[in-house]
Image (cartoon, one colour):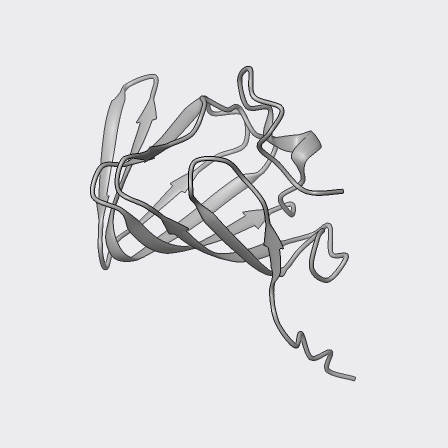
Length: 124
């Protein structure tokens, strides 16, 4: 039987970013995949991370920069980027961004491995 998700789980993070998780560990108890709507304000950045999941990011408005070992990938509205498990990356947005992030396996604070910031992650 189809399972209705009546609304997202809000995942608190510092820096003014809003995470609305519709499917995943915090919202639906799923560990296989997570789907979240993200709103990052202008000037937002997060610590470097080396997650244990692939992340598929579709930018709907604004732009994201993904810093990685080979440089920076600029992702604009209408574009997508894939980061693979084990890649060391850092997400930033100079102008702000609205985007969808899909993580496989599902995002979980214990899998993201962000540098030096225990305030990021999943509320559980």
